[in-house]
Image 1 (tube, rainbow, N blue to C red):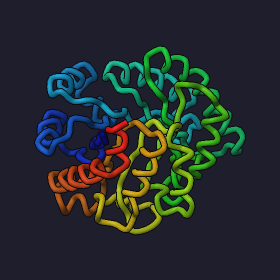
Image 2 (cartoon, rainbow, N blue to C red; image 1 turned 30 degrees about the vertical axis):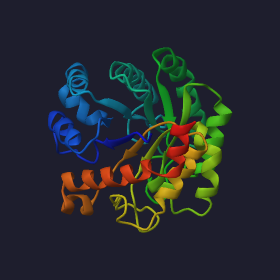
Image 3 (cartoon, rainbow, N blue to C red; image 1 turned 90 degrees about the vertical axis):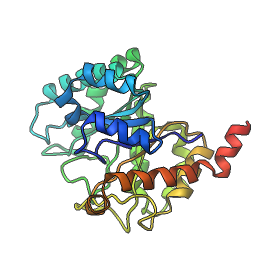
Length: 277
């Protein structure tokens, strides 16, 4: 069956205890944890609350910035990432999302080398802790200063070249769902993908980052989700809904909309086939 999750970026004003209560009310038992929010509560306390509520953590967001584009040194970013691997293991999540960081003043080749050098250190640690590092490409319209892997196919090729069992791909359909050829590309990426993030939109992503609840935009999300699962994807579908539409609707209404849509997706033929097999 489809395992749906809500990102804490959707409900970032709710404290964790309230999140767990409200998400459970809407039929969810999984959430994606935002490290910035986690730091306010502490890993041990958060982990206890999550277990007590019977929830899973679908992913931990995020590590990266190894190029120094966010003002940290490479060493600081790497040390932070090593700490996050331990945090992911303590939260019992399989997935730790990786943002590459922007190119900054580096050549493209050097930026790629910095990412590879960091993952050379992190991947063995992640593998030993049962954590997958999910490299997330970012659309150029929405990634200024955030990432240098700006093409879904190129990011997948990079992960394949790196060739480590603890390093896979994170696909954000909001970033690439309107790109020509994405639907054709997804079958080849399904087994390589560790987590899928979802939001609707009415066009290519931009700096406003209006991540609409599913069904409020023009993206053909159902077909893309079906394609991924039909071709071997087995992970979570994380709803990350942010922007004025969510603020206007309110968190409860946005989460409810995600529940309605995820339930409809779960009734698709691809899932019926999986349950019969």
